[in-house]
Image (cartoon, rainbow, N blue to C red; front, side, top):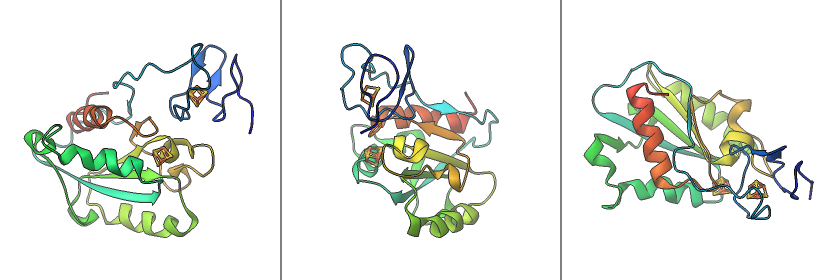
Length: 177
Ligand code: SF4
Ligand code: SF4
């Protein structure tokens, strides 16, 4: 196990000085109470501020090599508590019909080509989301999806809270950073 900087043994090397890189933090809690992230749901980063999606917004979930938890949190958006459809956002079964692709998991070797093909199948304009630290930074074991595509939106967490995902979806479709 590698050692992070700062006052804690961070297995993800997420601590630098007094700050925590949320794109790497796997929420293991080893650093508590010195650095423990506060669970703030407004931690996503939206790079594209162009308002491209004024009406309905269709999303496609792509698993590049996840443990399954990020998928569960994304799919939880459909349940009555989060009720994604009230915002005009819905899942679709093919990237050909999607405005955005939500990629979860590390970039597994066998998923590189399918990910490239899925992104190419999205009509333009499109958004690419990296959901969870595995997709953003590769987590502690794998490779980031950065090897294939630069994400427009990054949603930290291991796994991210559904409210964090919802907040990022709303901001990005409205072109808010
Ligand atoms: S909670 Fe995050 S920052 Fe703290 S040790 Fe674990 S991975 Fe590192
Ligand atoms: S970020 Fe965490 S929850 Fe999501 S796929 Fe990776 S290990 Fe699983």
